Image (cartoon, rainbow, N blue to C red):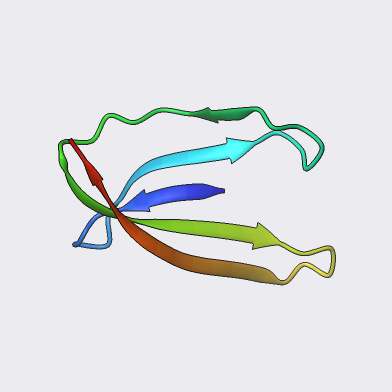
Length: 60
């Protein structure tokens, strides 16, 4: 899952791909302009969950 998180740690948008074989991304962004951090979560075959806190992006 890909999420945009604002400075208050509120998730404002979630994008997810259907399977690892597809490049289709389903999501919706209804957030106001501002700066948001990208969070990417991957679930491994073992069930372990990895979350990468990525770059801050500016929505205009």
